[in-house]
Length: 380
Image 1 (tube, rainbow, N blue to C red):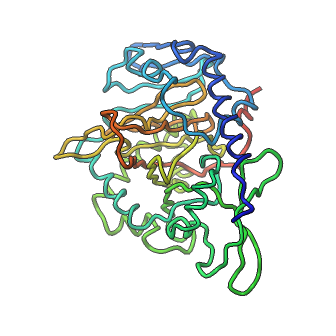
Image 2: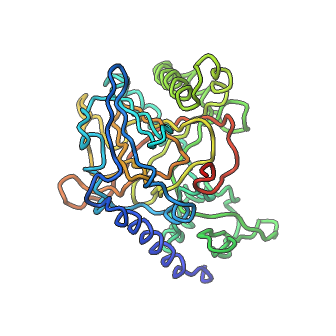
Image 3: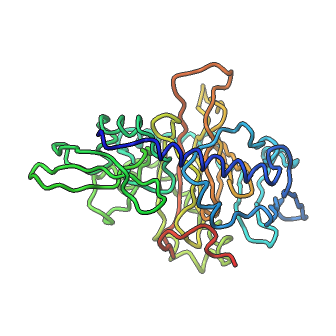
């Protein structure tokens, strides 16, 4: 792989981090609560209002993707619900100042016993996930040492779909213009030379509906739920809640959208370990429906109690800079068109450890979904 050069990718990563830091510092977000306001109305959920002055233009929205920032300097402890005097068990909404809904944060949706059922999905994920490294906005800017590691990692190579008997020729720049894309060039066992996108690895598992694609039974959500009644109960509760938040985002009623949404619901699960599988700031493919996340995230079940296992790994809105951290009993539904990401993970006590990991479940709908568009495409 001598043809692969790391220098330009290092420059791109540095430039992206600098652009995000400039956005934060330009608006004094690194030490203030600028642009945040809490509104309470009787009989309604509290609403966090984010000023439209913090909206990113197209160029900045594009530039800050594919990086995973440290929490240092982000001031997320002051740009979160508790800093705005919301109680830890209080559900709330997040909106732009024109009323556009950004997120719905629902606390204590699950009991401790119900939350523990998410671990069934984590166990299944660990058994069968091959991950993804064929490129998406959420993967990081490529780094040479990690790309080389992937070539020699059996699990990561399964993600490419390449015949294990193929001969790998090189990994090098494979996009057009100012892109961070890379491609793997290889030779089939029959002698044919070709290439595929080859990007930073994310341990993501797609739970496909049966019949959507020919896949192993373990990858089909329907088959798994048929064999596990507890997992089915947990998943059913997720779907019920998801339908309600979809209705809120789509400004409709559950009855009006039920048929379209229920048949287009999909599930992905992620294990982010901050070492081999890291997720960068990104925005999702446009859709009128939200993404909904839940699961253990940064917590571990210890003798029946959920315990925080590390710092960081916090879900946050990059645009507007606001933490939407959640625990195993909570659910967060948000507009995936708003750039969002996870912060770097760090040990609780300041001592170094070998690795960290967080498991999350992401429910979404492909109803009305279009091809990826640039940031802010719906704004005037």
